[in-house]
Length: 293
Image (cartoon, helix red, strand yellow):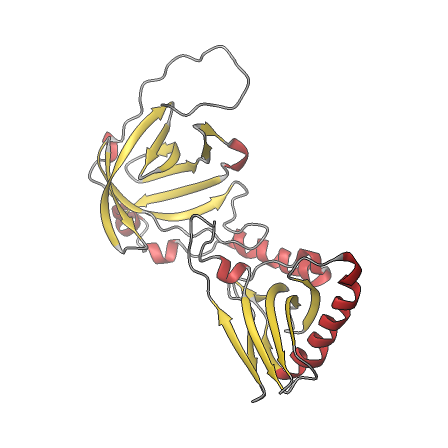
């Protein structure tokens, strides 16, 4: 069943002929740019879109496409829906442009067979391998590098984050913590991708998670703390990572602030997070466990 628009009922538009990929059958394409509607490849939270599609249309209903996770090519279906909308390798796409040299898609978010236009704001640009090599005289590794527009965007965001912690954003190379004391151990945890739980590997840099154990602490304690790491690598208590009962929040926050200032600042070496080589304020989650003995 075809997906449908979410707009109000209107007079049906004239039926357009089905678009064809015949022009590019047998031509290898590589994705060179993936951006938001703004034209930059970074979200406000710091998430970076990364181009990774490689494919060849075998026919109008079949595509040979590369899987970055399995590191091999697979033949997958291409299903026409309506207008210029296709399901390509189980992803909904609107064809914006197609020539022998380049293809541009709009990635569509679809729920219950309805296009969610407010969330369909990602665009993909692919060049043919021949165009990259013989016309542009370069390679895909060069073309996928962040643009000047990306750099200016991150510089602006970094300045805003320095001025006000509420603008802190995930660092592409996240802040790092290491111990400078035999009494303190630090473990950086990593996430496991899970589509069911909406977890991606990007969570590793968007919400870095650390486990810090302090031996010979003043008492036994265990606090999950959200900490701001500023562009100089200085730690600042932000909030509890757990839900708090209102009547205990003030006292708990005092304790977590003291742990941050008294233990973490003294016993940890800190490197600030960076994006495109620019240091900026970002937030991390640190679960601090104190052992009295």
